[in-house]
Length: 185
Image 1 (cartoon, one colour):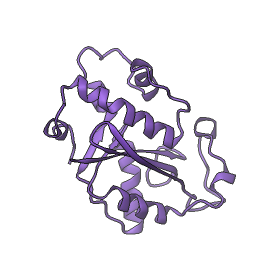
Image 2: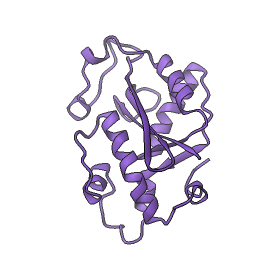
Image 3: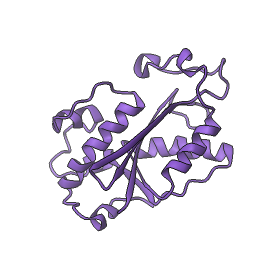
Image 4: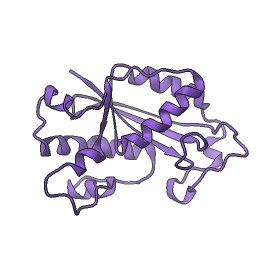
């Protein structure tokens, strides 16, 4: 059975080279529905006192929370260890993968993922949803799922893990082989 690692990042901005990853969370799934465990960490910015924390009104992360957080190097290595041999899933995977790959390059870390799967892309590809919102909050509403706090990495990863089975059903992806059709390598 393919292990899935549903992850989310909170960052200080949109530029993978200049902005910092502030928080990472992973919800591990054994198959597309059974949650087995979770992991999350705040990440101390590389230039801890001069880096902007970006839109704190959105993500709510404070300098105090980051003061004794793990370094980016430690966090990237830990993510690589935890997700080795997994399909990595994210809502807007290109964004999260871009930040993780840039950080990995900075620290000489390699990821050994089977591939990635994007819940945003799965939502957009559903028949009859062209005019709908594909935001994670909208998907949680559509599937009657609680979503206690948007833009918190662990809550977002849990939400993406929760909408994933619904999106796979919408694509009639019921077997592991069906799932792998949507995995980007």
